[in-house]
Image (cartoon, rainbow, N blue to C red; front, side, top):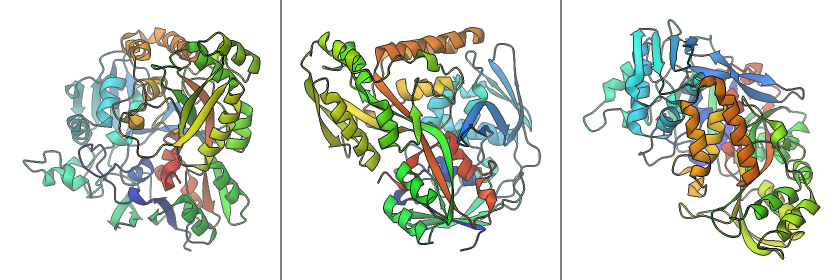
Length: 508
């Protein structure tokens, strides 16, 4: 197997998904970040650091240059100036200018997809007219309120920069944003150029003229697989040499292999969610009792094989203003029993727990079944497949919430003020949390940390869920593969550090 070619398994349905960076009206799903960032470049990305255990994580307080090389703000953090890199050439041979950035953002807002939600409602760029072009390499973003973390919002795949000169050649009266053409033709400034794709694979070649230099990998072949087991077996048999988003048991199998090197990534978190608007979970005593009866240490040991740590806040530990000292819950049978006795259900109740069809979720469900029985709660475990949109279930295990970026406002909004459709509509959006969160965008920058700390404390006390664990996922790379593939400059891999989803090869 050539060490300059990545043979990379991905979910089968992900191969023929849409390339459009922020389409919502096209029937095909949107390609995930680890593919999009092969062909498209963002303006910035988070720095990739390693903790004391050698686990990679995103440092969103230290953003790195990509298409942007400099940024500055006024004293109020409401005006941000971005300076673009000089002499960046697209796959079509056109030079990057401020017009490309403006057009790309204009189409994001016009398509009214996830990118518009992120930038308009979360980042604070209320109107697309609030972007000013100063010259060919300089852009100004005028925000509705203070946002000291705005630069982080320039790293999303939904706002990647399209070669507008080329895209405009394919505009029609019925398609003013070239969505049909861009759906199959990713024309950006990325490290790889898509050469062709079929229903089962995509082939990329290195962009020889990339602004960071020629990639150390010459070609990438992303191959659609029917199942994770199929992908793992084929890798061990020599058919794949590069795998991302591994579950603990999968990571262990490669750690034990003489042919592969493994790398751990710290990014995801899991929660046990309640439908707290309906009985019995509308009662805080019940929700807090379950937080106390959850066997956190057993979950980390038996569900994650030690590849995790207890989650301590609704703001992730990799984000600014995370407060670990506000967590009040640990496994405490006596406290859990006292809370249940003080509730309207002193003898317990029967309910349902919905999980994804993964071995990890099954292990979690079994531990929770045993734990909850100690306080009289009997659960029926159901597999979460094909639920009608918007179905509210009593309890569900969100086995992985892989954020697309780590920053305090986005952490909270992603989980407590998400756009319509996230998690199949099972999540609850309520003013209890949305009102204080949205108020931050009009709060003086010097007061925002205090506001974030209060929201964290309020959420933990209210207990709309159990914050279970922050999870390690992992990569496996054949020892013969060129080491450039794990360099932090390679977005195809490093993007999974801040947008880490273990469903790269599917759920099961």
